[in-house]
Image 1 (cartoon, one colour):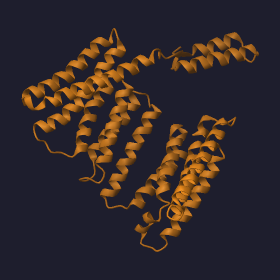
Image 2 (image 1 turned 60 degrees about the vertical axis):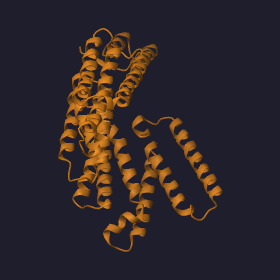
Image 3 (image 1 turned 90 degrees about the vertical axis):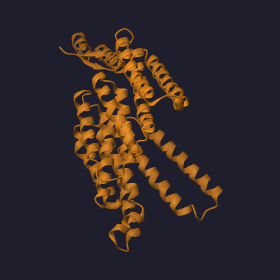
Image 4 (image 1 turned 135 degrees about the horizontal axis):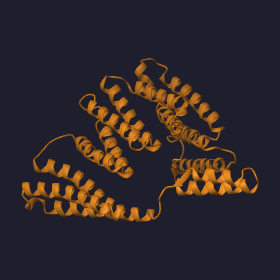
Length: 361
């Protein structure tokens, strides 16, 4: 029987709970053994070693970059390019060789090659006076890092590749047309997550954010308004929360976040002026009331993200209504008391018994 790999803490929980159930005679010893044998703990020991080595790799990478940059003018272009290429390939190859005996140390060398590769992109642009939009450099960096994440099946490198693409997407908003390259790369990211990382929900979370940025960019490029973009994201949040979350639980949280963030923008009257009618302020207020009522009802189910947006909406209207009229000292005192009250409410709900994971989100 193929055993499912889970975290060591989850494995201990299952062992302890099945032992308790056996002790109170809910299950027999044979059943407990079969349940426990269906799982195996993931080897997660000495995680602090990987943290130390990763930090060390970043520092070494930054040191190499700093050394090259400080002596950059005295080095010829061909020698500069050689240093960059040898640095990337040398550290990557050394890391792969060392991984067989010392996996974490070897992987830290691979991380150094990732840093040198990114620095090399910016330095080559400077060497040959290549003038491109800054976001394109992050796109090239992401394109170079993604194959490494695929081959090594390294989650940290894949997260870094997602972060680089995020910088590119934000920096490229409303800049020179619809980015089809971005969309193609995003599809590749989804595929890598699906086939390499087995639909990791946290990676899916990041990629959905990247997809939302692309949708916003397309709407802007096609001449759409901020109102349309906010409504599309709000609608996608509803779909995630009530339709797609049946397949992936994390989508319920992300749907709530999409609804809350886009809904917050829709509470400002300025965004409704795109409709060319004189009731923008009233529409924003009505929408804000409806949104507040919705999140309050959702909060009763113990969903903390909904409570968070209730707090944000209350604080948003407090600032909007009183900042210009109250003495600043009184404004900040009351604002602080409001935030403390929010924190207390969060803590009380989190300690409330009987709230499941899906509701806490």
